Length: 117
Ligand SMILES: [Cu+2]
Image 1 (cartoon, rainbow, N blue to C red):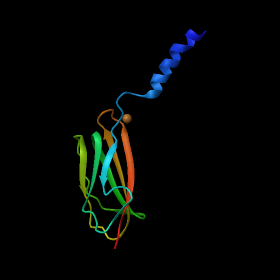
Image 2 (cartoon, protein in one colour):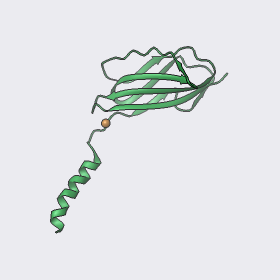
Image 3 (cartoon, rainbow, N blue to C red):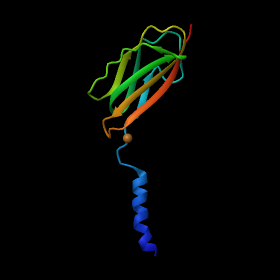
Image 4 (cartoon, rainbow, N blue to C red):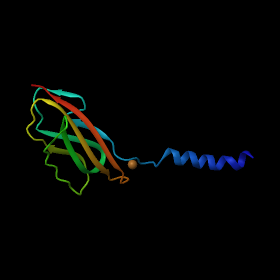
């Protein structure tokens, strides 16, 4: 009885553990999440531990979409620098999307930062 159950359980365990190579993860961003800045940042930088194709970058202040010139490139990279428009004081939210080159998974994320007067 034990023997008939053991093998399927081991396989189920391996499946749950997932593939050996996961998708890329964010290692750093500037501004960082929660940053409070004395001067407005001129660009947004984000880095990943593995190459990704960045698909989207959005910036909102309150409910207002800020104009960001984001050019989607087809080649994967580990870090990206996206120029930001002139920002006045306020709280901003960055949303991004990327495709992991490793496993093709779509990733999204967001972070907030504040520009002081
Ligand atoms: Cu993945």
